[in-house]
Length: 318
Image 1 (cartoon, rainbow, N blue to C red):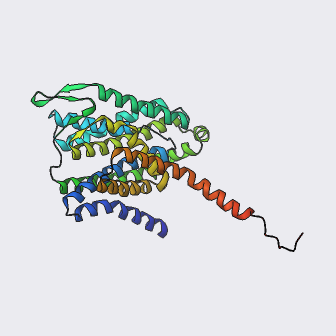
Image 2: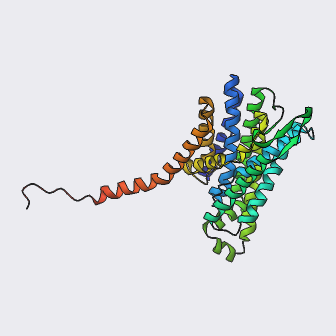
Image 3: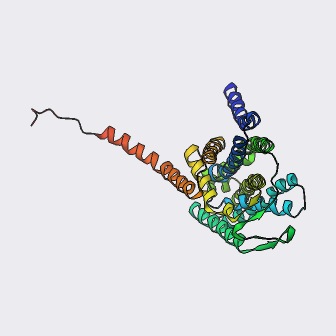
């Protein structure tokens, strides 16, 4: 009981770390870095709910991320709601993406899930790049150049604190879901979907719910990124953010929520600080994923080779 209490307190304490860093930071550039790091950590944690906890390896999780960002920018840019409400409505955009992906992939096996979700995200990216809209001031926006909005919050310190607070709340919520009855059902379906169905679990329904919840959180993260950057573009629906989520989970411990979020927070802060271009980031994510996949195999072969090495014979033996 005491061990469980200590683990719980440690998890809560870690969830508060990003908010503490955002409050303590005074440099404006560092505050901007922490804002995007917190949003990306929340996005990766949302992927871990379906990919790690649920065992549904989505390669198109960027659909919820981008849908939330576009929802936020359109609502705020057209003055349909104030920016805080627009960011909150990004949850609905991401949830809609989760409904679509979950509905199409709930009865598929893992490889098919990866392919279908990737195809849906790529279709959304192409569609976002095709359409253009009349905007305030007589502008025509959209296409590959994206859609602008006023930056919110307007100062870096407020943006960092907002993103840190949302990340803290999001991580606590995802951890609660993981250890709830719904989380137990999601993990049971991942372990053995046939056994779960035999025990009365509605497997497709559980998978769809997991996709929707993960999409909602990803949409919130996308809304934060769009508001902090002051625009959204089709690149938020590309393979790069999806691959980043998969790589972070593979490296830092898939299914733990906090592990992938921690890694994503640290690596995003480092890449933002160093201003690494997008093409190099995609290469880095691919290398991380390759390393995470090959690492256990290499270690196993090395340990096996060490155990099976033939004994050395003396020179006099014949």
